[in-house]
Image (cartoon, rainbow, N blue to C red; front, side, top):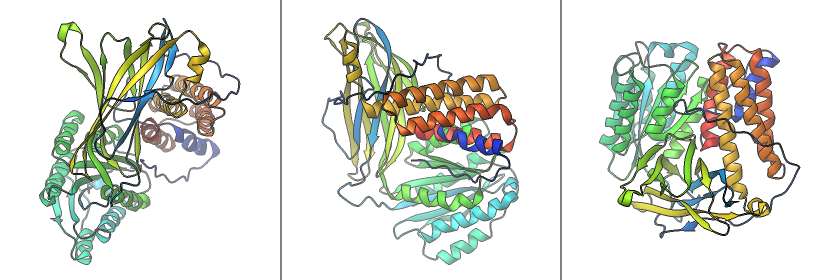
Length: 493
């Protein structure tokens, strides 16, 4: 799970509220499309819906260590009607793999040493964090450090850590100055990680930057392609954004394209914690290049409205007899032991006749199983049953999927509020926040007073009431927006 690192030291109750209230909504790799207005039903009286077995059928034998679950938030729908439902997909890497998951790692740190790293002691803490990795590498691991400003320079070539004291001395001699050439830093670091890899390890680039690209490749699409090419070679790219001045949308997008994690750190003293967590993840990778593909018959009565929190790729299969299979796929990147990631897709379902069962979609999981050293896969079928009995629909509610969908979609509204707030559109921001607040409250009550959803409803209300009192240009507002985007990734995924 991605982590949030922020130091709260703001003056005044309004600024404090502005920072803490939005902890329940989050961001995305790029600005997602604004979803259509969805009317949120009034909050029902406190009820407890009976739990039923999830409707998801294994369609093929599973191979590998990852576990796949997929199904609707409610598996029954009113026959002859059209309704909106959520397909919720969970991919889990168990804690207990039956064997040690500690893998040798090949880490290359791509450290931004541009002139902006001078302030707030950022370069000093970056050096300390890079040294922390040196001190915690194990036999069989390799380490490289690339410093980039106007261009990238290999300060420590990739190789095993045999003399930690000497390497730390080299790190301490790194100084800041110049522009920000992120593209060169990424390419050079990836080359070092690959050079040290023996094909069995987990090569990884950790990009640390506090600014926007000002030298070399500066186009976001071009940088994303660079990272995509790096990832295609088997190298994971994780990103750490430092401070309040960097382009968070760009860096999040690079983390997505690289299959790694994204962290926002506004206090440089927290860098060592982030690097420590990144090393732990690198050592416990269970699966590389994890991909989920969801497909359905174009005439099956299902329409995709939104995939929350992911940059999905739509596709259309061959069309025999003019019946095309359509769908989307999502790249999840690396999976670590004990991690669960989810995909929430909002769909419109045209229900079958009463008593009829509709095969909505097939869900296929594919990945490189690190433990087995072989391809892994799993598949599920998502089905819905038509009925005229509203009570049957209510009883078909799956608690975990309903909560997962509520967290994802509610936080999507909250992060849209943050984006509107950042652009100075306060009225629009308040409307999105109000929608998220209502959605959280409705689902909290539906699930018998769920504490997590109720907390998010209360904090979203606090955020909505606070936004008009703090200028979007204030540092506190900048923290709100950046925190919102990262939290969105956490709750949507």
